[in-house]
Image (cartoon, rainbow, N blue to C red; front, side, top):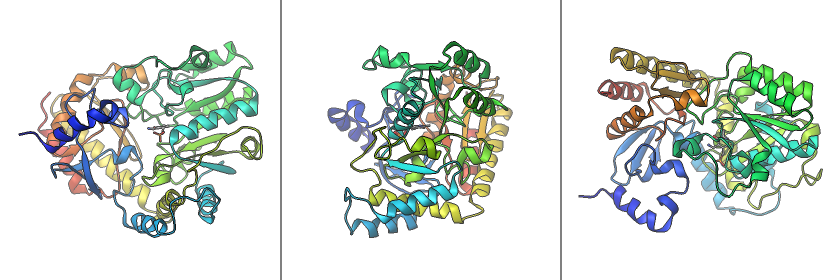
Length: 425
Ligand code: PMP
C-alpha cells in the first residue's frame, strides 16, 4: 500500500519541478521519496501518514525555539486581522530594526528583504557601489543564495546535486566571482594580489553550514578582516545561518570579529520569509533612497513577517540562558554520537559550534569543501535513511548543517543517540 507521502510526491511532480519548491527537499542525493509535512509542534514534525519525527532541520535554521512557538503564533494571528501588507512604512519596522541593532554589532543601518538570497545579492551590490569595484571573493562550498553571482562553486543544494556550473548564469557574471578554498588565507592573499584594486568584497559564512558544518580555522576570519582593511575591500559576513543562532549578536559577537556588512535570514523571520542586510553607516548610506544603489521589495518589511521576527528575537534577547542551554544540548548530542560511532568502529568527524553540528564519515579533519566531498557520503545516505525510518529527520544531504532547536528534550537526544547505536555500516 502506498503511503500518503508517496501519493503526494507523485502528484507534486505533475505540477512542480521535481515535486519541490527548493531542490534539497527532494531527497535526490539520499534517494527515496521526500516526506510531506502536515504539521509541526515543538521539536517534532508530523508527515502525511501522521508519523512523528524528531526534527534536526528546524526549517533549515529558523525554528530555534521549536515549531509553532506560542508567542510567535499569537503575534501573527493578531497582526493578520489588521491586514497582511500595506506597501507603506509601519512602526513595526522601526521596532524590528532597533531590536536588531541592539543585539548585533556593526549594524548602523539595516534594510529588510524577503529572503537570504535577496539580502546577500543586495549586500554585494552595495559593496560594489561603495567601492566602485566589480569582482568579489567567495569560498568553495559556501552558499549565499541563488543570485547569479553566487552560483559558482556553491555549497548546499548545488553540492548535493553535483552541479558545478549553472546554465543560465552568464560567463560575464561568473567571471567576476573569484573562489578559493574555505580556511585558506594564503590563497585569498594570492588572489587579492593578483586582482589588486579590482575586488569589491569578500563574502564568507563565518561558520560554514552549507558543506556540512565547518568551523573557521584560528586566524582565518581575523586574516580576512586584515586583508579587507589593507585593500579597501568590504568584508561581508553572511550570517543567514549563524545570525541570532550562535549568539544574540551572531558569529560577529561569538568570534569577536567585525564585519563591514552583514546579512541575515532564517531566525530573523521566525519562519516567515525574511532576510536583511545591514552594516556600517558610510556603506549603508549608498542604499536608495539615501544613495543610488537601488534595492527594493513590494513585501519587504511585511507586517506579519516583522511581528513574527520581532517576537522571536525579543524572546532570544531576553532569555539569558537560551544559548547556554542550546549549546549544552548540542554538545551532549555530539558526545553521545561520537561515543556510539567509536564503539562501532565507524570513523567520523563531528563538527560543531553552538547549535550547528554535522556528522562527516571520515578519518580526517573536515575544514573545507574538498574535505567534505571526500567523505564516505554513500554511508551518509544509509545513515540518513536508518534515522528517518526511526523517526529522526536529519538534513537529506551530507552538505548541510543540522540545526538544533531548544524545544528538543534530553530524551529526544537520547533517542537520537540510541537510534544511531542500531546503525550498521
Ligand atoms: N546564505 C546562507 C548562509 C544560507 O544558508 C542561505 C540558505 N540556506 C542563504 C544565504 C539563502 O537564503 P534563502 O534561502 O532565504 O534565500
